[in-house]
Length: 149
Image (cartoon, rainbow, N blue to C red; front, side, top):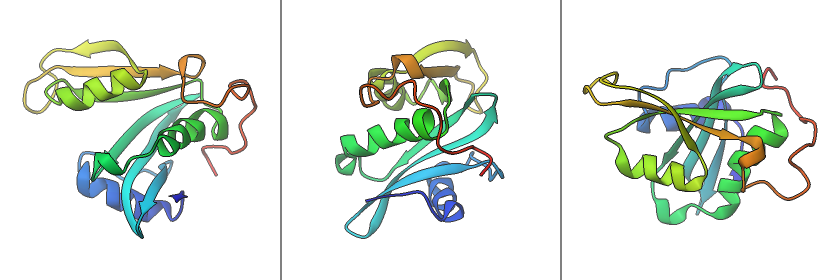
């Protein structure tokens, strides 16, 4: 089951796994519940125009479904009407970065030595038009929800 409320609980779950993600009033999220337990959260914040930062936290990758991945991008591009999502990655998190690049993100910028441990900080981006996770025919629909609601 995929849930989007309560957003404070979804943030708290994510923040336990990604402690660098501070609470923000514009935070939105969806979570994947399996066997009555939250196992993954996709979060969105720092909205700027029709973009935002996207975050993900997963307890057990084997429990992630294609449905959840589709829902994460559908929420961003179809529900919120974004044209792109961005994510900042620590280059030392090689496995996570490779998963994101395989999912369709592209590396757009990097800052050498910018992470807390001195590694490269990488900005990745997924554009709506390049997102293969959206259902056909829906890429150009108008948003159903505002990020401010």
